[in-house]
Length: 91
Image 1 (cartoon, helix red, strand yellow):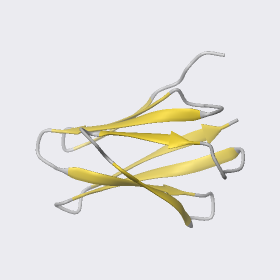
Image 2 (spheres, rainbow, N blue to C red):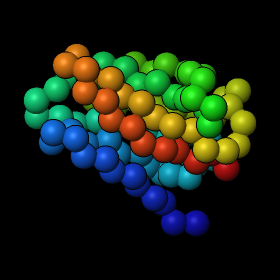
Image 3 (cartoon, one colour):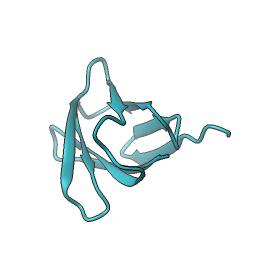
Image 4 (tube, rainbow, N blue to C red):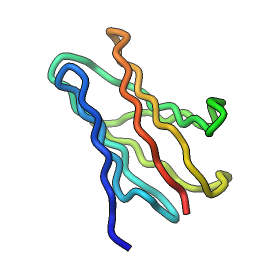
């Protein structure tokens, strides 16, 4: 199956998730010229936060451990209250 990378742009900020969909883990990368992002929240389809990841060098790894297959939202909140949102699919 081919890998899919989702990219969102907001004020020159980029959110990349690859591979997507994934079976065991995926890499979440956030880049911004004008904003600092320090954490990523993983939300289930109902909007409930199920995991918080710390960005290290603008990268976080999401493991499937204790998560069901399905669609999840990836929310990155910046220090200037900018928000990037993407989606990830767990097989």
